[in-house]
Length: 264
Length: 264
Image (tube, rainbow over all chains, first blue to last red):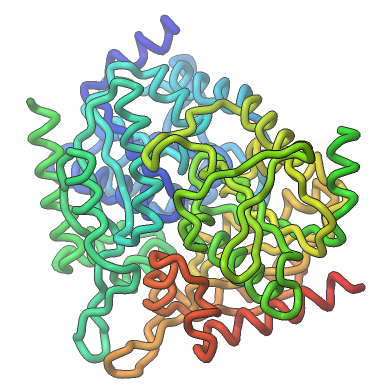
């Protein structure tokens, strides 16, 4: 615990990205927010902890698949990506791509504790933690081990099915006493690349609605864009490959709001 | 354990729906396969166990939100939906929609054990278990407590990011010694409702590719359709509301393959 405090004391700001439901784009939001921070004068000063132990996606999305964590006297070193974002992920420790991490809760807790205490995080401005879906072991461990978290960003999609689960995540963060920065709605209406009309693929407006109902800020909507999935598969953060797209602009606006909140 | 064996012995076939990654549509596949089974002469003979304890979605998608589990001398009774599908879910036990289940692994294991042993499952033809994402506690518990599982259906989306995680789920099922029925690719290309052109929202062909690479059967693709999300929000299974759609036909074809496998 003391070692975690020492290590973590060297990171100025800590933000967790959570959601109740899986597949809403937590990793996408984490990767693009981190990239936005790193490319606005913070090269090498931003690290992502991919805390999804059983389904880590961040390395693939950042073009770091196949990389390995190395270690030296100060501890374990994160892997650094092209844009200057550092990454720590279970994926860097697995022997093969198809190797599953079949762990029960206590092992997960100890893996997270090890990451926090044994990685040579070094002096950094931002730590972004990409949490797995749900309010289970990993999320609980991270929020208990990092009580000095600046705040959490909650990611959802517009559908109602997602809303009932995201409400649980908001209540979870409240119970844990962590400030809630607000709700990001991902996969908001998509513009058809053929005809230009908007399609509400996953219903409409749920993110804003849940934010209002639960009394938290609505940080913005990120439109669905087929290029987002293609860029993730290619391992290039979307805001790097398509900086002029509406989705990238939405990411940058959300990032500005978060930076303001962090400074408060 | 004995009680579980007695209870479970009364159910002819047991199928688990798994994926490595969240949000790929496990619950959607579970609900529609169960509905397909129930409406083809098995009214009241199909039950879903929603084993996603922290993010249960099945009740909402079946129009059973707000229902409660009741109990009598034989045990806890599942809730029965309009189409004759029975459902057991943590959601039926929570006081409010926004109440999170903040549990570590051991508690989850005991909740699942209780569901299996204390629900009056009764003589039934099919149990479909909707597992949460990942290869953690819930999935591990279910597969350990139900060694007589007929097989697992693995759900994915077409993108590569999803593939590396779904491979872990396939290896997981293999390590647990459960037969793998095959891979279902959800959110395959969407037809624009305005112009009729196809949009590859989440890249293309990943489901078939991962099935080939891992040596398992490819069961079929379910096209993305904005009405799927709308119907789920409304609480009506898609194959009931839009039986003539390509997605519903895909569900029925996949169901036929699964029924053949179960009979083998």
